[in-house]
Length: 259
Length: 274
Image 1 (cartoon, each protein chain N blue to C red):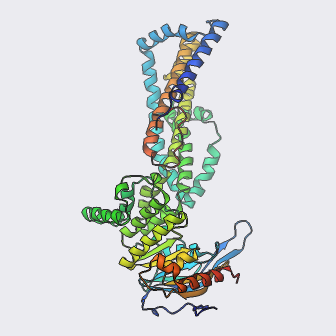
Image 2 (image 1 turned 90 degrees about the vertical axis):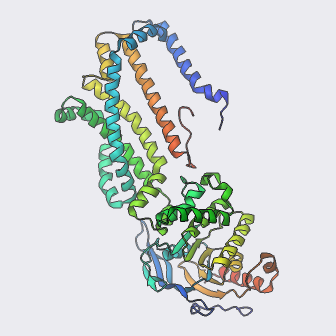
Image 3 (image 1 turned 180 degrees about the vertical axis):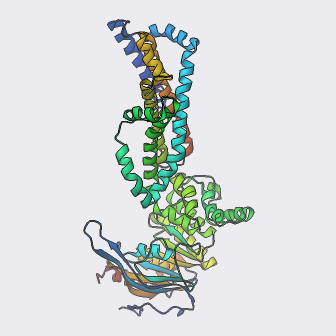
């Protein structure tokens, strides 16, 4: 399906507009506290060539990936099974209700106490935060699978495991992946937060460090980088999601833009 | 009762028209627990019937009479509260490839192409690859969908979807077809087309068919026997033999006096509220 030029350029124009407003406001307030995007360009050049930031970006992404993969491997199957088994659902529903509203960042001090100030506690806190939406949406998806799809497969002799793998999982995939997308954004937030609290390395650490050293231009740059990272990850995931669920009649329009 | 139609409270014994029994419903009842209020509602009240091997039997009744539920029970998808379903002499314990369902909502696997949908049951039944491929091709031809073999369900019209669903069920050769208002979601033209195609397939393969519908003309056109159900709680009200010659042709039948009488008579029974 082709889109009109205006539709394609729309998101780009909004972003350009945002930068223009930023530039104007920065020029009015004064660059000491609110550097303009143009003033940031040379700073960006030194930041990217200096190399420090790449290491921190790598550390951040590594922890996000680990927490995220761990969650997909454990939470997706749990959600799918919970959607089809009342016993499992009755067991995890109170746990979900209990943990869902707790701001996960509040648990970071305890995790530091238990697992130290290294990668482990940060990976675990990311894992915990992204687990919940994946379990929740996986369960919703698995629960709402049309009975008649299940019955059709049962009549063909599909057993319990086959039903979960070959009918329930694919049928629940669109909803499950919606949960994974929510989880990705939450994971990014928790990644940055945990690095701000446990200051060791990573983008969150770099951000606060530049504040401490009054390198405000760097602070703004890191914020831009974190924002861009979020956009790129979300867009990349959206491409994967569409490729996996193109068959779905309820395929929703992506939020950012379309491939 | 008008014009010599056999209608009785107890169904005719099986074998009367030369069909050995395929499916026996023995005092099948179903009740639901009322959510919130407590207590139970009786949905099906001691249904007893026999369906012969190779017989085409329709169940008609007002909406909400539990006729679909009865079919789900025969399929083994939903348990009966009491009573028994006996298929070829053995009480059923769940779904099985001897009873292939076709649903009004098609229930195709949306992530699979037409070809993959039809193949699903063959793969599940571990049919050897070459044999399965040949069978799928055969069915694609049977339901006139070879050109559309690689499309996904969301790209198909309602009539095409139901053709795929029928082919998917026929693929694994169930002895009995359980059809739950299969043409109910289609427009009149497509419905007539699919009725004719179903009849042709049935004439050739002589499968046992249990066909749920609220369309009296459809039931009379297709069936050897029509069972009429009364509304809540659903019970069998009449068992009517459709003594029209086969093979049936729609144009001839519409002018056939006997056909007209049967449609009118069964229609009247459905209107009565007892």
